[in-house]
Length: 148
Image (cartoon, rainbow, N blue to C red):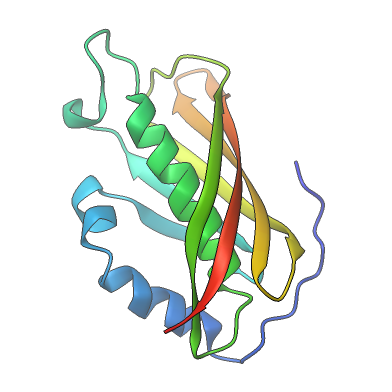
């Protein structure tokens, strides 16, 4: 777990900008991701699993896991840019550490370094099942800061 780095947003209504930006992300909506927590430099998202999210052996599909890592780190970075800026993914490295069987995915995206052009992030992805939580993946990403 990444420690709380006490990030400060660059404008007061950053949460509203996150919600508005997510409305335009139709892929995120189609998959079914939803926000559980929005804080400066931190995003937590959940996904209630359906059959369409699973691969042929009944595990969460790796593409779903990677997408969740990408979206949580991207929005975590987005909480720390100026109002007229956005972010895009430059690099994403996902490490799958356990197969995922359960009923819900939980992803936590964290910012750990902010530069003027690049923001470095991490994500941890867990699956909720009858025995609790199991971490199934972690990821590193680099987000480029762009003008909207």
